[in-house]
Length: 232
Image 1 (tube, rainbow, N blue to C red):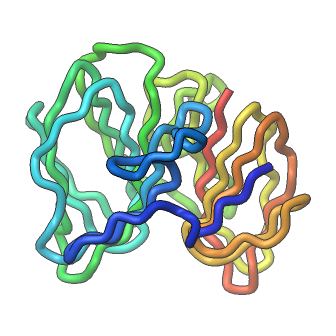
Image 2: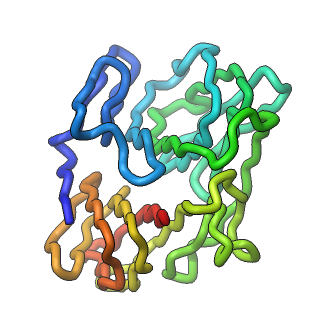
């Protein structure tokens, strides 16, 4: 078990952007922290109104975006476009190569988590999807997954059959049971939580669990929103 606190991450800071990186990213490089399981990027971004990322390329990545506050607009070289806000999840499969831009589509700062996963096939036809997600159950809900066990329940399929992202929105003191997997990446996107065998996790803290699982995760007094990557 390894804990990464919010203030321990690499930070990119610009006049329009604050981006906190869970793994080596861009100019920030640590050979001991280049990814976990199939995750190669996990960025916690704040983007100012009227700004964003200009058109840039990607290849052979599954890019998953989860918005916490605000609205994120997307446009790419394959003709896809959309606006993602809380309650929707987005997946862009870069495949053989795609160019895209994304920007803050609202009047207030946008806060979102963007995650990059290695696909299980290269040179796929680029594709894009977004879908609504219902988190009212208080359970871990598969939102983007390629895992066979999530085949009938995930909002969007992932081109990686050994990885899946689930999200839980927990009421105060509510708990969920984490799955058992070779790799679990648990990120507290909002609120606080306590992880059995680990202790307290604050907002934007992460736990990386290897060859374990089955622990209880309990929300703090204000509740919590938790992102869990399950990888085999």
